Amino acid sequence: MSTVPWQPCVLLKYGELALKGRNRWLFERQLRDNVRHGVAGIRSPVRIRGRRGVLVLAAAPEHQEELVARACEVMGISVVQPALRVPRTPDDAASAALELASSRGASRPAPRRFAVRARRRDKNFPLSSDQLAAHVGARICKELGWPVDLDTPELEIAVEVDRHEVFVSTARLPGQGGLPVGASGRALVMLSGGYDSPVGAYRAMRRGLHCEFVHFTGAPYTGPSSTYKAYALARRLGAFQGGVRLHVIPLGEAQRALAVAGAGELQIVAQRRLMVRTADRLAARLGARALVTGDSLGQVSSQTLPNLTAVEQAATLPLLRPLLGWDKAEIMAEAERLGTAEISRLPDEDCCKLLLPPHVTTRAAPARLDRLDQRMDPDEMAERLLTRVRVLQPEGRPAEAPGPG
Image (cartoon, rainbow, N blue to C red; front, side, top):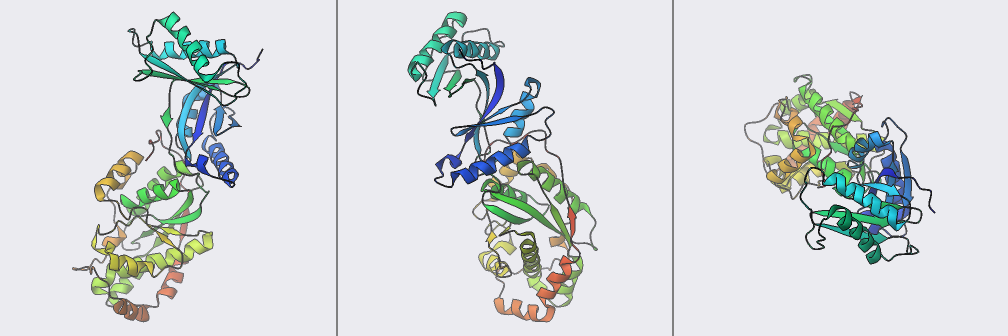
């Protein structure tokens, strides 16, 4: 007779991580580390156990809701499943299913069509999956009088048999999906106060990149409002990875120098090249292997193909653009889902609008940019900018996590 007590827990089901081959253990190790970090701060010990393709989290019952919310923020998880862990017997499984079904149906007295989906990760269980589902279903029919509907049930009850216990659940919440943050290396995100770059950062994290952030301000010719926004955005995005650092660099004097040197309609492209050149050097110092931007092809004049090419030539590291094929409506919808849109809507003094020329070129000529570089020495400018970098460490997490994207 099993001595496993009844205990609330949370099952974390793998997403594409389950498709990995011989190096899967590396992704699983990173995921465990991320889960451990994600649940840190819950006011009771959290136990993390591994099963085949599943992580099992358990904490004090009064912290179950917070545990579920934290788990929903972890990249690399496809399903977050609150469950009851019970002894490995058909009767305990049926009793747990009855308890969960009764609580789910308490607000609706009319019969509910239900289905039981049983799965055995351990094939040594005395009943087959179909027999176990029938056993549990018969108990619910008898006690609650609900009809079985295997095709279009209003309530699905999952019964999963493991080696030492049975997990019973009536809820499946979507996780973030993707890969565990950190499994693909480190990147430096060029974070503005707008809608696009925070969404690009999230998509990069979802592909397993651990991100740091760099924000360029128009200081000393603008106030601190854009830094406040970047700080709030980095804090929001930090809920998905932890260990967030925001590097703030004042660009105003360099922008003015470009204008005085006669950049003219090249002003925006030239200052973006300077930002990328500076970020590229900062990334190398931080051990990052790529830069990430929120560029969307053709969205504004600086994001035409010739201008994107001209800007990318200032980098030695790969410049990743997760949103290259997204339109503005798609980006805005994602920003709303993530909770970054409300921050991006706040007013600020964007450095890109400082010293804006009457006309911005859509086709920056390489020869003209080379002549401007010869007058300005962008390498020396980038090094000078890096002497003024200020590092902030946003902390905290939002009250609610978004669903998968």
